[in-house]
Length: 134
Image (cartoon, rainbow, N blue to C red; front, side, top):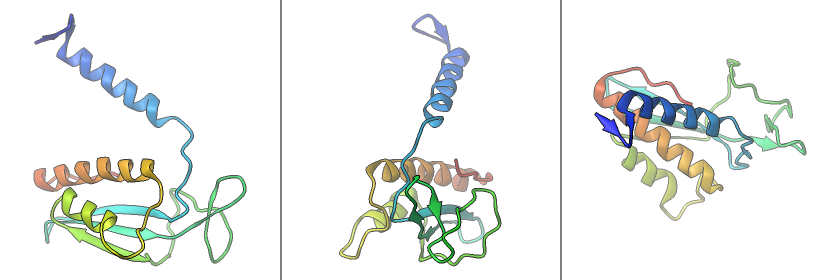
């Protein structure tokens, strides 16, 4: 199939390159914390753990208890503030963004990122595939 003079594979390659380029930019961290998204294939649920952090003067996420920078690939023994679960991206998204309690995120770009990741997680759940958070 040809899309405006470009075959389908080339079009998807261009989309992948654009996505990679957009991912390589400065992202201001959400002072409300961060989320780890997992799948529980046995219960058929998306599990979202919310962790708090503080942001230092350099914009680095630090552990609120120790003041040390949080690493992306370290095994940390931190307890989540709250765990959200749902069967679909929409169900979890509503739990994260609606209600009378204090919302667990404060930045629109963070909410959009979570929406994309929740959709990806739901797709993996439906297809019984492993999910890797971006």
